[in-house]
Structure formats: structure tokens, C-alpha cells
Image 1 (tube, rainbow, N blue to C red):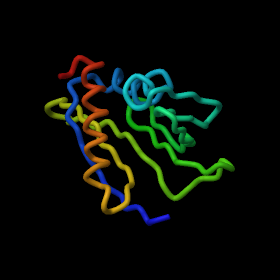
Image 2: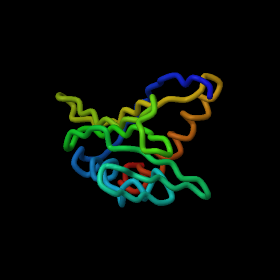
Image 3: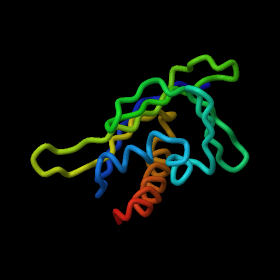
Length: 130
């Protein structure tokens, strides 16, 4: 398996941090924009897209602020990779944005960012933030 590199991408979102947090931290919220279906059992989340399934462990969360999912292997052991969704709010303007930290193989970073852009576009539609 090739080594993946970390990248960050930020999206302005016209929403309250509290509402946005519901969409990034719950299986029902995530299944509306991130994956076709999301199931959780304890700290483990199963993300389902078409015919593929990926499993991640909720590694950390800070209510109203961020969630971090660590990808796990078939034995539920943590891998080196994770994705984090972090809500940022400007103290002065109260502008809200969503910072995404993820990993991709070097030659697939543009494609991975495009995928996030499409998913965030779906999220914005749900939030009425278009």
C-alpha cells in the first residue's frame, strides 16, 4: 500500500456551528451527505458507499466543534489514517467554515479534494447554505 499524505481543505458554510455539528457527528447526519449509509456500534462507524464499506473508530470529538474518525482494518485495529471535520467560527464576523483534514495518495489529492467539494456541496444544500 502506498503511503498517503495529509492535506487540509476549508469550506465556508452558512450555518450555525450547532446545526453543522449534528451533520458531522451522528450516523443519521453523516448518511445524508457523506456516505450512502452510516451505521454505528459503540465507537465504531461503518460508512457504506455503493458496494464498498469502510470502518472507522470515533477517535475523538469535542461537542459543537470537531470529530475525528480513525480508519480501522478488518480486525478493528487503528490504521495510520484518519479524517477530521473541524468547525471553525470567526470570533469577530461569526463566519463559520468546515476544515477537513484527510489523507490521500500523492497522485490522488486533487481527486480527493474534488470528492470533498462534491460532498460539501450536498451538505450545504441540506443546510440551506447554498
